[in-house]
Length: 481
Ligand SMILES: NC(=O)c1ccc[n+]([C@@H]2O[C@H](COP(=O)([O-])OP(=O)(O)OC[C@H]3O[C@@H](n4cnc5c(N)ncnc54)[C@H](O)[C@@H]3O)[C@@H](O)[C@H]2O)c1
View (cartoon, rainbow, N blue to C red):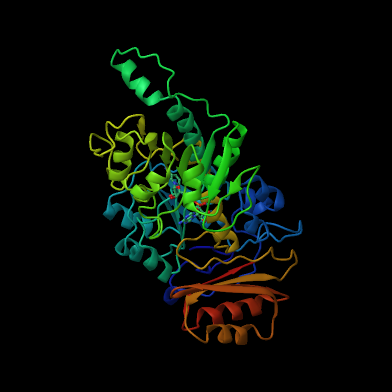
């Protein structure tokens, strides 16, 4: 039983509404089994939260602010069951175990029939890219409340169906930013010294000591397209190596160091010795660098793409390299990438001069994997313990600042269908109570409301829980206290 209070019968906040049983003593605070030592759950507060990489917005929410923040303790954590598949990083396993959750781990993805059996009883599942959480699999999960994708992509999960069942999905889009930035820095040096070609020649037994068209990068101009997580890190690294940095972004951004935002992509292309791409894949960025843009680049300049394969028109790039207009290129991402390791790679870029080709390894480091483990496990813990959905990919993002550390205050978390009139109904239920703060947001057909209510008796909590969970729009109701 998920989020079970110490005295049965338990509340079932991660169970479909139809099967839910009202907890008889939702405010019982002494667990029936001794509470495990569990990191953030027992000792959480600003210190623990500050030790983990959180965004500025998160710091203002449940975990930040007053040292008197109440540690929400809605259930006996030992009852929370977590299934981690595909060798999820040890940082996540230990963070979740430290909470006192029951964590079962598997090194590989499970066959669908085994997965269906295993997922039936768990409150949280952690996967990487090989586990497919389809509608069929999700429908078998009777208690599932949250999914952690310990990777960047989330298309292995039926996100819409998960949201309709009140299941939030988290991933880790930015844990590998530093790894990408470091790869790009190395490529700037490698391209500038034609190292790819020299290395190939040496492996063929050819000694070719040349200095023509080989340069130091100090004093050269780096043009960064897309000044987000990766682009901005790169800006700092490049300046520390003596480069001048220009950047182009669709939004005006505070330049770091002495970098400078330019007015247009063309201006950046015309003035850069190295152009590196760090934009997302959107309709606007598809083939953003084609023949016209390559012609705008300086004679002998270099192009680096470690963003997404569709951003660059590959035939145009191959032509510019073979014609000698570009001095070289480094490409880590491709419009079509092989699904498995092996001799499957084909591209017009094979054999182009001074062209570094890598198999989408920009973010593939041990550190990034470890960071992904930390980031996703923290998101799962915050959602389970505090109701915070900031960073969810399929779910409205809601957070409240910490609940006051006083007795008889609760947090109501209400996932519901997004139809007119719901808030009025909830307001009527809470009308007689002291609602300290409340926030709700919607995403498509799903909405999520969090409300902190103080001065409530155990009987009133039971009433609130019953009335809210019985609303026709209810998907999942949880009371944290
Ligand atoms: N090679 C790898 O292994 C690897 C690893 C991680 C991320 N990536 C890719 O790197 C890219 C950047 O990632 P990030 O984390 O820095 O993203 P981000 O969202 O932090 O930053 C993207 C930036 O691009 C800007 N932008 C969007 N559209 C633009 C346009 N048309 N013109 C100019 N700027 C535009 C945005 O305003 C934003 O500042 C993404 O495509 C991501 O998928 C690749």
